Image (cartoon, rainbow, N blue to C red):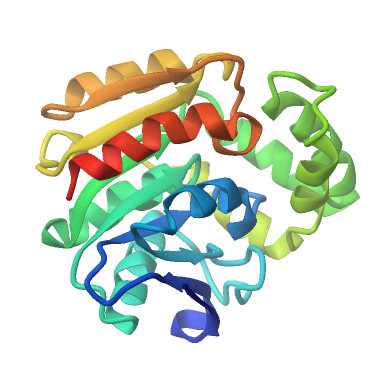
Length: 261
């Protein structure tokens, strides 16, 4: 298996894992305040059968900081631009949290390019009252930096705040550039992609950690709006089940990907 890092399209850091020229492709898209490593356990699980494209969303990980305003039309276009850059005609898409509206935007822009969507712990629109909450978070981070935010967020995101994975998650969040966090948080503060849901024609699996607040209920409602979509709950997981409970998450991911081939 070849593993390569690339910096190119729109300054995005992209990472390819190629098992065979004829193998199907899957794209992994990270959440706010994480990077491509949030998917390490999934890459290990699928890399024998699938070619993999991971990337850091704008302003995250090794990707360049945004030069202007960011919205989900732009973040969705990034997915398609990366696929074009690597000559990927069609791919499955797996997105976490912020990666959910990114994926919804991508499939709305190029529906024939996406073979299936697995969307984890995210929403199709900003929650009621969420805009002000995001603006408050931005103000706090701009004043205090991301270290305090990383501690409180890791505790909130994990079902088990004493998880041995907590330090790794805190470090990942704290390493996010403030400018990248701010730009993408502003996108999350005001978006609505609900009109995309009813037009999705590819297979869709929505996944949520069972202890991720109201998101399991929200995602079940989303599933009801997408033709043929399924929903799976990950036991004993919070907001980042792919990271916190990778074996259980992969037990949902692998059959879904196999159903696409």
